[in-house]
Image (tube, rainbow, N blue to C red; front, side, top):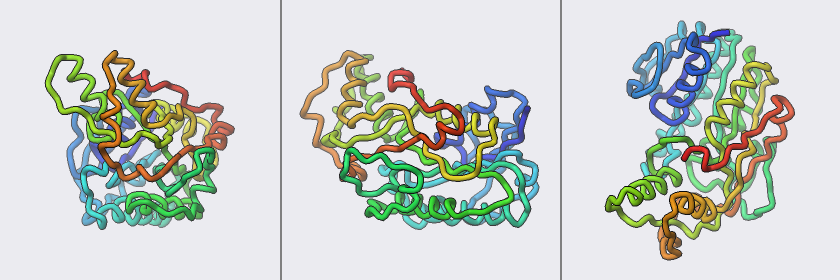
Length: 304
């Protein structure tokens, strides 16, 4: 059955790919978008320019939506040096206000928001796999304001009682075909693609690569969300687990091997990313698997 979907945020990975996914899944879906920039190069039914920090949200659009997705946010790409106040506003204050507004309107549809496993904090135990409650109540030191703002939202969502159904999905590292930006995978792929074509480019700079991370194809995230909608699972916080667990070095080696290009040890230990001090981040996805019978399983090479 076709739906009216309202998405907050435009031109980020979450909003653009979710819009594309739900349009391909059912061309009858009405996809309305709210954000500062007009959507580029992907489908939408209606766009309204809005500054979430200043402008009032159109209640009519909220009431008409069968599904509301909060995909706005700030600070996920550390290289952009996002203003701290902006991070707390978009990652915490605005989604809290939105949930409270939906409660006042007696909204009865579905609401989705997102967390990050960066919220776990400074974890040094590579054997630890975190479930939803351990993330919600983590007392490990938060490594930056992005992680702290997302952690505080997750704690709010963990205690939320509403007339509408909601799911707050905790995401690991996600990857997607044709992604651009400063995140690790598009950063590596840009170098590999240019080098393969014989183009001149700067030699990449990596951290030591010892950090252990979990990698999930964002298409699998969309499939998980779709199954939650179809089955109407209980409200709550859900980890999107599954995928692959690799050290950063192992991931980079896999990508270089796929392109059959040489990788030098001298490329490592040249850069410091904001999460370099976090030894390991792993999500336990059993809670959502029990509800929908599915966990992401696509390999890194699926986007190549």
